[in-house]
Image (cartoon, rainbow, N blue to C red; front, side, top):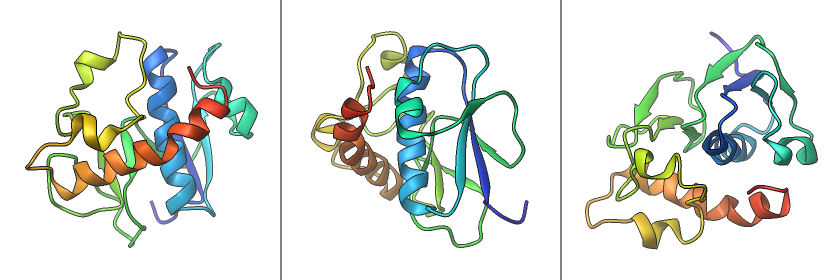
Length: 152
């Protein structure tokens, strides 16, 4: 993979993939504004925020593919690797599927809530990694837009 002109967030038709993919899209839009970002999700009634913000929702698409748990935590420096949120290895792409501070993915996937509001205060610990802090900051920044764009 040599460019990030097309990035696809690969989702399933699950309520928690709605807010996860929104945070991923938001971070990509901020850190890689020249990239065309789309969602891959077949036959899904969720993701109303995507339609309101003009983000294409389609079947498998070409380009760089990421999970909805991946955030563009910092500017792209040519490294396509993805770091864990639990790591201090600073790459552009960070995956929080292992958790983020006191945020545990398994506790949030079926509760119908969104973790964005006051994320640093709610999920911060005394020993956050730089990647965890970056994710929690993105969540706080995207909260209002998510609500205004029709998120849950």
